[in-house]
Image (cartoon, rainbow, N blue to C red; front, side, top):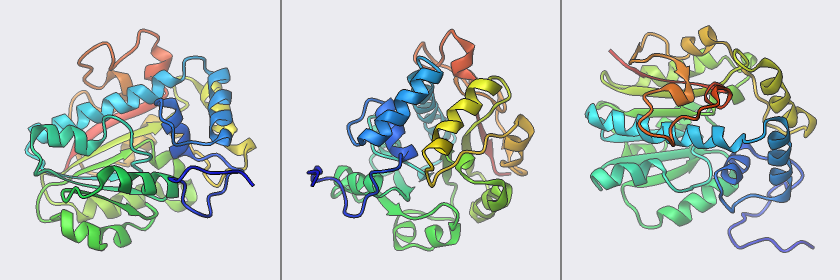
Length: 272
């Protein structure tokens, strides 16, 4: 019998890769398994240097959170937060003010278990294991009721998550249920996979999950389809653009090779 580390919850399926654990590996984390690393290796073979795209997404997270804080947002709901690595929302926010409140949500057991260890006794941040396709269960949870005030602006984050929602599950309708629950002055940040700029390579990347028969299957979307996920929220400048092109602040936010900046769209919008 394979000995698993103490942080691995019981019942983990080691035969299929997890997007949360692959992302952890691409960011240099240690909470992943051989099946995840093999999937990451396939991604690297398809697009050498693909780790840069994961790091660009993490850099966008920082810029989006800082921007929202500058607009007066003091609470955050991070859907699909993944395995905790350096630069999480609460780390960014609490450097400015330890009173900022953060609720992380993920359905991956490893991500949730390790998040609980990281957060420990932090009474301004918590994690909830839930499926993003059931927003009401998230917003009505004891964790959300304790940390979030839906009568005040919230920063809602969907980073690299909505392409895991199939067309049959109606991603636009799903995000509308979240948007409707938010107060005026709230912000929504989205990053989403697209084949608009790199159709062959990105199609091959999503094929990694198809061939692995993972329960997670990606649906890439066009610029207009991703734009629809923001509903009637007002996009802030520069609009919906390649991830590395959204308000870069330094060399770690964007790379010279445009193909890494354009695998994902990124945007932030405000609720009127």
